[in-house]
Image (cartoon, rainbow, N blue to C red; front, side):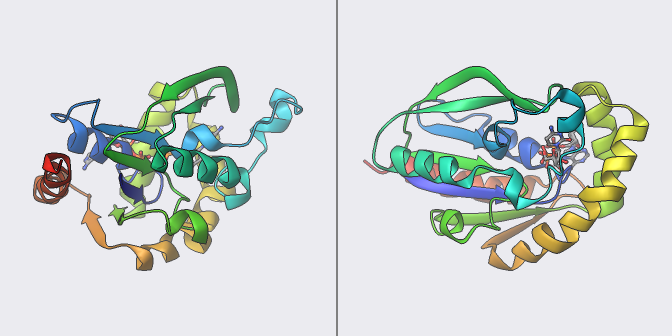
Length: 204
Ligand SMILES: Nc1ncnc2c1ncn2[C@@H]1O[C@H](COP(=O)(O)OP(=O)(O)O)[C@@H](O)[C@H]1O
Ligand SMILES: Nc1ccn([C@@H]2O[C@H](COP(=O)(O)O)[C@@H](O)[C@H]2O)c(=O)n1
């Protein structure tokens, strides 16, 4: 199995890049896992308490579960990937059965902060977009897709997102094998990654 990690700050375009990479590839050969699935279960907290959680700190992520899932896939075993709700700030009761594939892509803001997770990646890609661009994209996306309003996004950006990005996420750029500049759509970089994956899939 070829394991590709795609990191970068919120709104840099990780999900978009993953969709562009996998667009014309077969689902049976390339799978995608999102770090969002591994936000800790917060069912013991009220909704109001969950709203106050810092979701940009590495401790918000259940890296143990992520590691055991990545190792299971690598060993050829399927996993039950949790499904996350941004509206509820919590995991749902659902899971998605994810079968091992020739290529697995894992995307998320914090995946390069954890040394043991980092070591599981054959290729590490960091997607870069400037912070003003990322904030604009995040505002648009969170309001239209994640049930947030302007005040919520700005408050979270100032209180936790920006400081956590500077402390934890930006420094992991140094671990990347490839940095994709994504202030604008970057078809050249996407083609390069697709070529690498196509070669892997072509192997018996
Ligand atoms: N290169 C780009 N140019 C303009 N908008 C983009 C670009 N890449 C992504 N977007 C948009 O920005 C928003 C955030 O992108 P997304 O892929 O969800 O980022 P991430 O997964 O890194 O948080 C989405 O609405 C997406 O359509
Ligand atoms: N309940 C939650 C959980 C996470 N977030 C934010 O999501 C961002 C990471 O996801 P991306 O798709 O943007 O990479 C992260 O910055 C968290 O602040 C949230 O708003 N609510």
